[in-house]
Image (cartoon, rainbow, N blue to C red; front, side, top):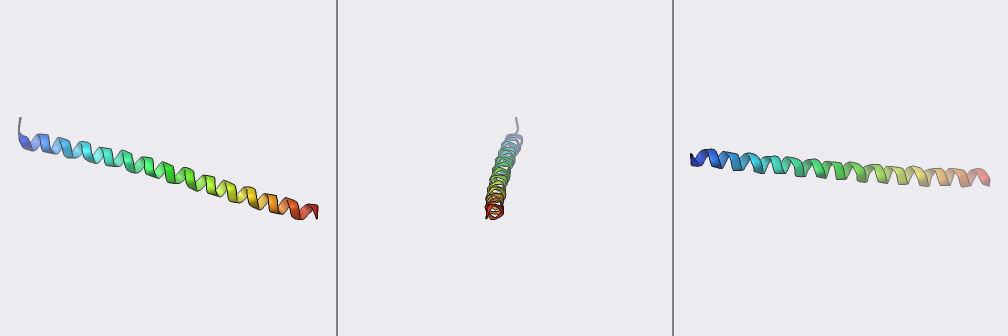
Length: 54
């Protein structure tokens, strides 16, 4: 087997691993953003609700 073929196969696997890693990072950032947005909405609603009681 040619060394270049082995080298290209190794590069493709490495790039595929990076793609999976970047996708997982993207998912983690998305979840974090949604959690932060949810907390902000919750706090805003609580402030709004407490102003209605006054």
